[in-house]
Image (tube, rainbow, N blue to C red; front, top):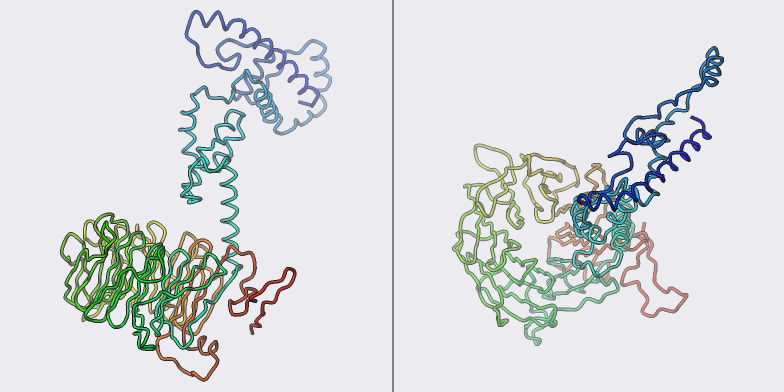
Length: 593
């Protein structure tokens, strides 16, 4: 069918369509008096249509192409004269083009609800809420009515909440949630690109002179560090141009240099906790000031320390006792629960989301205890001669590595226990080396990542109890590991921090320092790494402080990937100018080999 015939066909069927609409409008009042009102339908569907309107209806119902009209005698003679020549090939897809054109014409007619569903608006929203962003975009291209429904604020606000964008916002905070969703997606793509290309800003947190780094912990960009001098320091890396305040202790000021080493430090959104070698424990409230709000003393050295991430529960282990501390309703700190165990505690973790009564998991040699505040210590796992080498917990599960010893060697494994049923759910892995770290809390659903002394990082599938991926990541054993939905960040005993795209089994980049990586934590836009030395003795005191610190005293690095620049172009805090003049930059640039 040529263009002239197509235009003529469209003109005639539109004229008949307009006549049918006018006739239906005249009949509508009479029909409304005799029977209840029904949903409008296209003309010709409930009554027999004729002419070009019937041909268009046949196309829209799947006839494919219009049937040929009855030819006149002159047209038959003309076709007979042309039958001896080869027939001309019709344009491919002519019928489909005609159908598309008819659909567009019907969409332009407001009185013909071809794609409009005669449903209440609230019911249509309830149907559309099961669609994702791509499906909503396709539905918005159907018709004007579907476009209004598919761009409703409720649908796009729900999509933002489902994908984790602005989780604390309400629907009334923004006027166009579809635009907000697009901006969040663009920012997420930019951050992922910067992660892959190591594009961002890096800062080396300022060290304390004549002190060796002992322990580091972080939460949501806030970093706490303890030193051999007894000092405890806190940085807020979210502000970037920050100064690190000291958290004061209650030791006598007339005895300089006599403060014991800091054994452990922990921090969350409201509290900072530090345990010392002499058995003392200091608790600071980050909202009130730099002086401790509570001080607790053990008779022996504190061997393990845990702080809840979502509340104010603190757990400590000293000798054969495990103590849980928590403030009362009046704000006074008190012992919530106290447990006695059979061996010295190696690892201690507090179970998140336990509401009123705190729950902790502790490992002591080959014993694993489940500690509930309203109950006595209960043995969760025990196999003689198989010590536990690492521990991590989530809201309803606990995962720990077990070292296999004895005459029957079964290989080192990771056991996953249900905290509610108190039974083993999975036995993962069969490695020759000891599992040194495991991350269950921060891993995606049904996945878990672990590090081993055999220098490999493994991803475990909790649904099939199999290893989904194994990477040869480090030259020595793996000391820290964390993963999200597309990447793995691991630290090794040799001081190497590696970033992997585990979907492609590809290493993206790596950073090396002198000391083992004892802590790493990342979110969508930042990364905190800490290299803590084995020895806590200051060497080469005659050298420059900066040189001595880099070689012997430990390092803490903060990476910010929301900044759109290369990491090696970032200026260290020691090299930043104190005074700034518009148009001039007095920062010192360091040359890297």
